[in-house]
Length: 451
Image (cartoon, rainbow, N blue to C red):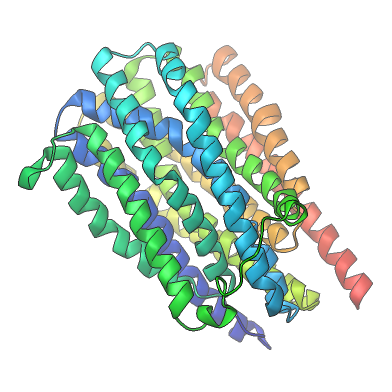
């Protein structure tokens, strides 16, 4: 990271940081995609088992990993404030927190996986695959959480290209391991869908070790000597991280879990409607990588400028990021309008599902327009370490406004299944408005206090 003087320099630096983050997010999504698609080549039960297992794991992982992203604004502000000497201590304490979180997940997961799967009333084969998939995946939870700390540290320095390269290394590793363990090639055990969990767990070990090696040996990371001094566990420092990280993690959990809740509430609709909803929601989730990547970039650049007390510059970055995200959304909206038929066709050949998916995609258009405003503002607020308001906004906009409104519209009006999307769009729009007012308040207050 470096100080910039004008909008042109800011835009150039912003894009330099943004593009690798976007590629990284796409790469991480592709790991789950590979697990699902390759498992489907074995049997429908293996495909369903992996899909169920990953659906249970994803909200838990994204929420807990969100806690560890607190490393990014903390280190970015330390760097902006020229307090580099405090960075190693912060990173090591964050690793301790990552280890504790991973052990808690493994411990509780061991006892609750079976009861959760039993309540879903799955076919025996599907339930067995999901159970084995999650158990095998468990061997990679600890390194995955530690990697999240390393990634947040690396990204906070603006070196997002490094984490991009690590993720790109993970893709062929995961593909090869899937090939060996799912299908039992070259004498390896044929584990089916469960093998995808083992492949992902081993892949997490690989990317963790690669990131640790880079931080230990490569410029500019080795200059911090992260592991050069032994630091004992500090409860106050860990609580400082959790004070910022817990609201981030819960906010992310509220966002990711709402879609599972909507799917469950829509279970009374016919199979065609549910399949169409899932297809459109999957595409909307794919598009969300654009504003999410802008959000993560804003946390870095706003945190750096806020740490240096250059609040006019952090404000300029905020609106630059929002403008870029809105530009992305307008472009993708244009693509959806022009190519709805082709997009829906990627998911299904069934004419009824295809027809409904095209209609759901129109709602996805408005959904991602709201995301283009809300997500970047969340990233900017995290850069300012203002996270509690974002947590409350996520809870209110999705669970108090969006979900109840969707249920009422979807159940008691002629909109039917579309009503759930209208409710979510309404909640997200209300949340975006509230977040924007909060951002303006924070910026005005900081600029007034520090000139």
